Length: 442
Image 1 (cartoon, rainbow, N blue to C red):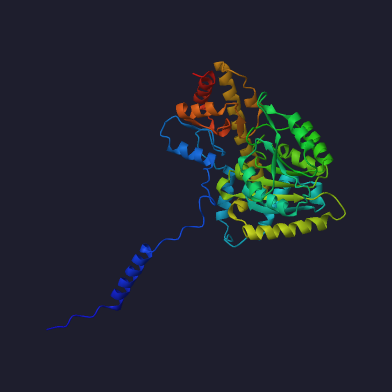
Image 2 (cartoon, one colour):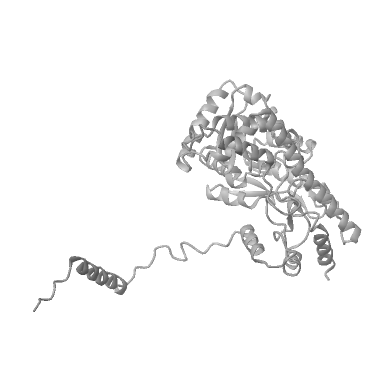
């Protein structure tokens, strides 16, 4: 008669593991140190929450006027033809690799980017008093600029950074995260639906000397309202008088008016006037490289005998910040943009693509205004065509916006901002009729 076999070592190990697991489950659990008091639940990002709600909506005629991305006349994402060409060239390059870029990024990209925003004949470039750092799009550029200023900008009186009211929502979070105090200056006039220049200039003049003043270079987000050139000149005088530090955020160069030089005018004027300043530059909108996160941060020091040494010191500290934040930036989007920026033929085609995008948005502004006026919609709608760029501040209040969402399935941010790129020849009548209905309260 055979004897029963001994249990294998693997069977014993399995049993031991099960017993250990049971013991762990039965033992009293230790509570997380990250309690609700220390880590409260954050609110959902309003814009991304709006996008999610739109995607879930099954209504056939729904309209997305919230997204800050260009759409063609069929409401589809548009890959710029010149970007397709550059992409093909890049992919066919036998030397293409996935090696690290330098800390400051792709040199031919950052050099071309500086020329694009400052002008190839900029005195700051000619005098070697500019440093450029490739960033994670415009958001990363604003962040590294804010981080640098929080660490190195002299703020003996705890001077704040001033934003326009309203501004791009992320400005508040970015500067708060680096613990810079925040104040606002008036910008949008609810009565005229234009620029409150008197309020803006008065607030900047009364700000503590040496404050940081954040300015939208063109196509102000979210209002679409920009200062005139004469107003920019007046602002420059005030900022110089009060020894403020200008920080330009430029997300729409070429996309706003269709003219790259026109959209960079304010930045170039301040540089020509000898200001020390910095610039956040994004290629999301004007190249349609939203997901590739291509951008640049530029620091321009003022003209002085020691300017070259000053910019070298600033460059060294920016490199340390960049290394600790992202080590080095992503390559692909920068390579696409660099090919276009550095090739005369591709650059010309890019300018044509920019005119296509900006031209369609201008046409949609005209169409919406004309249809609202033809309907006799209460109020004045001239501001729709006076404003510029991707966004328009309609003047609709939060209650009316909610009504549009619930009853017409038209999605926009609660402050009444709409993306003009979300309008097209197929939905502009429906949107105009819905605005007319909600403003009449019917």
